[in-house]
Every structure is written in structure tokens, then in C-alpha cells.
Length: 165
Length: 197
Image (cartoon, rainbow over all chains, first blue to last red; front, side, top):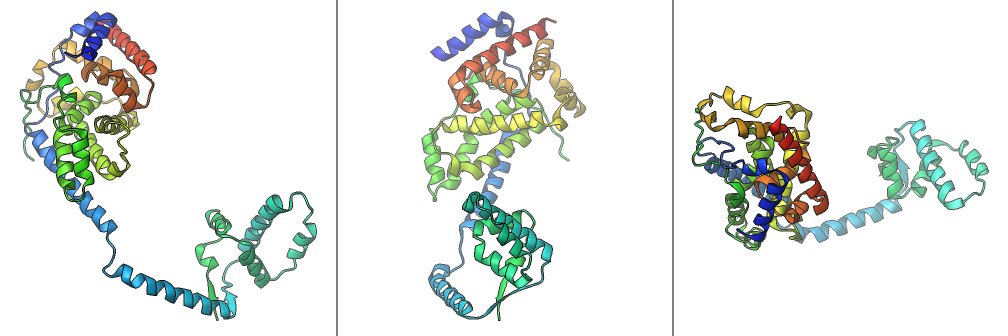
């Protein structure tokens, strides 16, 4: 018996002589062969998890060989798109855009202009048409603010799709 | 459905030795699991070595065999899924016990699982004869332990039945040794009062 166990028994004997005298031999019963069968069951679950894990880590054959070409092709496509006139899909409601605009302008006023009055700009915004609003949103939105708008339910990811004419 | 035979002789509560029965070192088991080639062998070793100690640890908390069985399997599934997060800052044994303890505490704290008498449940399965060994004092002790809140019950079980050092219990529960001593001492007093009542 090691020192730690002596300490445990001494501690219990001191705290509760009654509890320290109760035998711990009989405590529970389990179905016959349980530990053999549960080991099999757990091993089967483990095998499934291992296979799933391997599948998650797998990549299609020749993926990395073709990746470079895919990236270059996509970059070329983007460059071509940038040179083409862009129109925004105008299928969304005026209310959503206005709300998104207010959020972005609010953030800009709060963090960038530090107390300077932006009243003239806000007033001018009222006179913008839908295309001007979209242009402003796209020019002034970074990824974070776009994600914020999506999270707030003010825009849907599909709202932000632009198409080249 | 196959009839379930209860087998008290081979599966008598293994007591403190269970906590110390692990044969292969943690390092050896982890090395096998982390080596891509022997991962399955490593897991099998882990299951083989820890299934009984973890089962009894869980069983002492939830009392009912079926619940202990579910929690044991969930524990191992969590282990398999999270083994990459085991950084060996604690021992494998305490990490496994931590998962099993948390699973058991979650089970006990679930309102669906409260107010359930495990002994009554076993009797309904037709195992009355096998409960003859449950004499009054053990039955009363079980009921007394059931009155403890889940986390205090976990501390009591680990100290009283598993005879774990406070240092290990502290690693498992994330609680300071001083708080654990206080918790255990109060639990013992409550149980003693219950037994004498």
C-alpha cells in the first residue's frame, strides 16, 4: 500500500469511521460478457470514425497537379471581368440596401470621422438612385462589413453577386 | 431479444485497483495512435485498457448499467474524435477520466435523467435474485450518494471508490485541491448523516 492510499484511508477513518468500515466489494453487476461485447462495439465505432477521418482528409486524384492551372485560369477570368462593364443584379429591395448603407455610413462616421458633421453627405444620399447606392456599397464595404450585413439578415449572399455584361 | 444474464462474480466492483490496472504506458498508447500505421492497434489498446476502469467510474455516478453503457460509448467516441487535441500536458488517464466525468455530470444534470431509481429499474428487468447481495447498508449508501449534487458526487466517487490522489482529481475536474478536499469532507459528512438517519 503506497503512502497516498494510507493517507486516503486515514483521512476517511478520521472523517467518518462508519463510512471507512463499509466494505466496497459489492457494488454492481453487469450483464454476462458485457466487457467483451462493449469492446467490440466501441472498436466498430472507432473503425467508422477512422474511415470517415481518412475520407475527410482525402483529396481527388491529381488535385494538386491541376490546382495551379485552375488558379491561373480564375485570375485571368477576373482580369477580363474587371475590364468589362459591370452591372449589379438589381433584384433586391430598396429597403435592404438603404439599411445596409446606413450601417456602413454609421460605422464610417463612428470610426473615421470622429465627431465631424456628415450631415451634408447623409442628405445627399437620399437623392441617390439604386445604382449609385450599390456602387457606394461595393466601393466602401470590406469583407467584414459584408459578413456583418449578411449576419444581420440585411442582405443575402446572393445579393452581392455581380455579373459582367 | 436475448435474455440478459447478470454475472456478479466476474464483474464485482474492481475497487481502487481498477484505477491502477493499466498495463501499457500512456506514452506507448499515444505513440501508437499518433503513428499513422498503427493507429487502430493503439485505439484497441486504449479501449482494452480503459473500458473497465471508465465503466466503473461512470457506473458509480449514474448507477444504472444501461446509462453507464451509453456514457462509456459516448466517452470513447469523444476520445477518438478529439485525440488530436490531447497535448499530453496531463496524463492520458486523467484526460480520459475528465471526458468520462464530464459526460456523467452532463447526464446527471439533464432534467430528463433526474428522479430515476436505478435499483428499481434493474428489478424490472427480472434480476431480483441477483440483488440479494445488495444489503441494507450498501443500498442506503447508494441512496446517500445520490443525494449529492453531480459534481460533488463525482469528487466523492473518485476519492472514495477509486481512491485517487487529490492531484489527479484536480486535473480531471479543473478544481483546486483545497476546494476538492472541502467538497469531499462535506460529502462524507452528508453521507454519514444520511446513513445514521
